[in-house]
Amino acid sequence: MPRSRFSYLETHRVVHQPGSVVHCSSENVDWTSLFACICSESPFEGSFAAVKDHLIVIPLGKPVRIARDINGERQEQILLPGSATITPGGADFKMRTSSDGGAYDTLHIYIRDETIREISGEMFGSQTTVDLPPRVGIMDDILRSIAYEIRKMLMAPSPADRIYAETLSRTIAAHLVRPLMSGRSLKSNETHKLTPQQCKRAVDYIEERLGQNLTLAAIAKAAGVSTGRLNNEFKRSMAVAPYQYVMNARVRRANALLTSSDLPLAEIALHCGFSNQQHMTRMVRRAMGRTPGAIRRDR
Image (cartoon, rainbow, N blue to C red):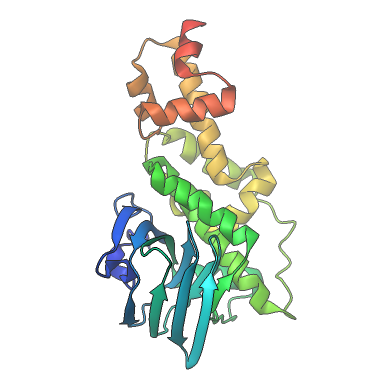
């Protein structure tokens, strides 16, 4: 069953504290597997009821002092910019924050519990249960890099980023789950690939719907595999991840239309699945080293 958009109403609404301002969020970009927002927060103290999904908070500009009571434990620390504090789903907590100079900027990322459970099942077997522990102020280069990719998407939102957002949410889930499974054996699927028929069904589905808002779940359904299998095995079969294949296909289609038609650039962008002409220009220049306008002039 397709997932619905991950809404702010499903979160703890931590950023709804007095004096807080949300600068940008995924509320209106139709992401289903994660919710994220960038905000300025004023120091606060509050109690928060548990929600189902898992929260990661990363300070962006300056250190933040935090005191948190969660799962019967008192946690106090100065959070450095780029560090991560994890609040697992299902946990009530109380928290107090402060920062020199008042307000501070943060990135909030929620990962669906369903994604955590899917990933743990794919990695270690369907009977595996995972309980994420509350963490505070951890310095994790991989998690920070993924979070900053999400921040970039929030600052320049595009409907075409939906597959990438799904991929990043699954990558975060795998990164959080794997250390908890010390001593357990990974499922032996490292060499599995999609069959040629499954690859063809996935590729045909993508190519026929480049102008639409593609999702991993829909591509996986067309190929006749699970979302997890598509995410893991598509790259082994095609040498690129699903998100990158979609973007490459959109660039190829745009290049073909730029050199063979007189359609306006904005129309080509929408036909190829880019959110607007500026998004197409950015992706084409990144892939081909030239702007769409230059390609058209030199045809």
